[in-house]
Image (cartoon, rainbow, N blue to C red; front, side):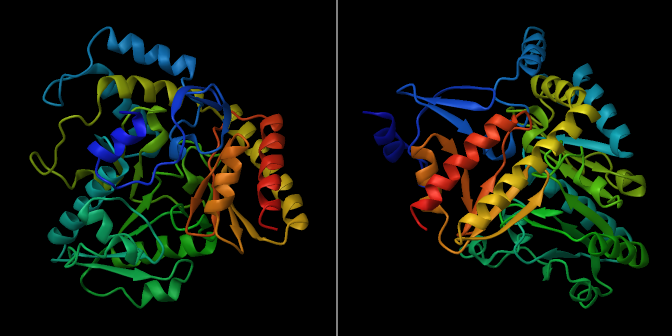
Length: 390
């Protein structure tokens, strides 16, 4: 039985896999089982931001693995404690380490619900249409896309949905039961829509006025993806809680929920927990990732992002199927007038890995280590793929 038959026989049909069997990955490249080389502009859904098998990060993983792989949070693992300290100081708050973005958001929602409970029985959370916050039942309920709700109803109460970048729509939803606001600063699964600066500042003001928890879901935007360690640094607005995952350990499962001030003091012993969260090997990787994401590195990624945007906008003037180029840093969406899936398939044939999201959007999430040469090659292939649907 070959690998594709095996998948059909033994795995639940939850994901339509791309016709690519990965044999090896290194840096910004992936090789398939036949030895064909692909330029990876997806990074495992913005996970390997420092490239596949980054040597410095792998070295840190191996060093920790030589000591132990797991001891549980019932005991003190120095590397776990160190990562918590580094993240807490970077944000200014207290940390809970878990495994996935959905878990990080679930933790944030629990903090918000408990805070609301102890401040007057408040439980409603304002989220946004077109948002995505995870695949658990609770985080699916917080997601503003009906396709994620179809078979889960009745959903956990009570999430209400405002219009993205529309502050008045948020104001209309605030009432005496409102406890929190949760938002992605760039809607990733929703098609790469960035929040406007005045809108985000307005959310901060509303949260302060009504004693609400302001939660920024930075699962996809965090850890340098937008050219800043936290995307909120572009906005000059700090949330009460920020959630991180995906690229924090450059390929290993790890997530963090960081809460500032009184929100970091909301949980007490027994309120939350995890078995694998903050795995020592993942923490060792994350510490090295954070060390490598210095200002010089991030500034260079912004320079590359500017170069890529310039090339893509030149492509837009050539192909009328491109409706808009949008995003922040190296989180880029190319909105088309036609379905994006066939273009993704053409790119794959030509040796470029990109992603289709929200039906008509090409999503680019390349490693932050890409060069201008990589950009030139990628844009050339995208142009060739678009010519098939021109």
